[in-house]
Amino acid sequence: MIYRELGATGLKVSEIGMGCEGMSEENYSMCGKFFDFAEENGVNYFDLYASDPDLRKAVGAALTGRREKFIIQSHLCSVWKDGQYKRSRNLSEVKTGFKEMLNLLQTDFIDVGMIHYCDALSDWDEIIRNGILDYARELKSQGLIKHIGLSSHNPEVALKAVESNSIEVLMFSVNPCYDLQPASEDVEDLWADENYAHHLTNMNPERQKLYETCQRAGVGITVMKCFGGGDLLNAELSPAGAALTVNQCIAYALSRPAVSCVLAGAHSVEQLKESVNFENASESEKDYAPALASFPKISWKGHCMYCSHCEPCPKKIDIANVTKFLNLAKLNAKIPETVREHYKVLEHHAGDCIQCGACETRCPFGVNIRENMKAAKNLFGY
Image (cartoon, rainbow, N blue to C red; front, side, top):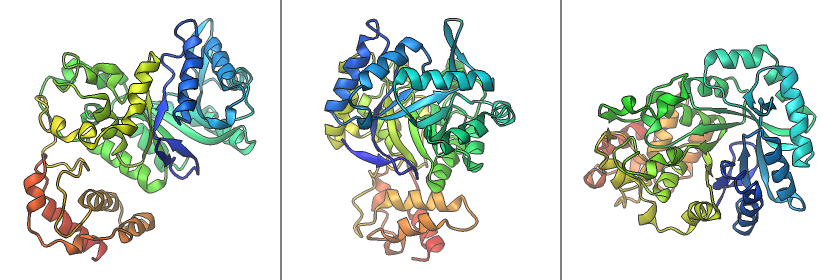
């Protein structure tokens, strides 16, 4: 298992994590099976958005004797009321729900306390106005949560939260179909058929800015809906008009700036195993570029996907990373020191480019790489 830094939190997380979708199945017995498999295979991170007390109790039982082996991402504002899940902005309900969570999970603290499901700017304002964010900060000061996070499907809201310096982790929906959709307060827009009825071109700029801002700000991204609820794995259901594999979906998400962990949803140990097997997959099995380049309903023409198909470069330039650092730097009037330092330690730089154009003949997306190298040389100075 490969482990990644979770932004600037200091936590090292498995790049494949667990979602909680299937944990309540088989009368909650799947929960223990998932955690046994996770421990055996180095998966140390999981998300628990569900507020079902029986599920939380099952997770607590599964963690008994091995709490220290797992990093918990669990959600504030996801409460259980009148026998069902509720997203709450009522501070009293949120406080009660958090205390119940700690009790049922049999733990003294949560590693990442997620402010749950914020997809509207008005909702973010309510989180601040109702004292939810202040409560999260209070919990952190008491050591009851170690880091503050936010879950969202809306890049506009997520970016506002990141730029406010209020969160350290962002749980966000990342896949090559959703990444083309503009910001919306209605999560169902992400998979609505009518929004894919016409040919779509290139990543939504707000999403790209979000990922790059998170990278610059040290906010780690944990990925939900990597498989689009399973739709991307089925050609008939895929919004792109073609299917991707599990390995391709995971590789795409992990190649986005700031992404630390893909939370793989599973309804059986075999499904979780399929995601974990990404670690042993060949580069050709992970290669998403040919599939994305041939999607019948989507075009990524001119947009660098950091897939490295342009290489090898005769001057040994890491073209994908040079382009990524260029995009990160262009977001700011002044180049962030972290971006400058990451660029500096590359073995070869944009200034080494001899403008031969060999890279452009191999790029599946028709990116003007030579112009990018010129721009990076001008920006960084070498």
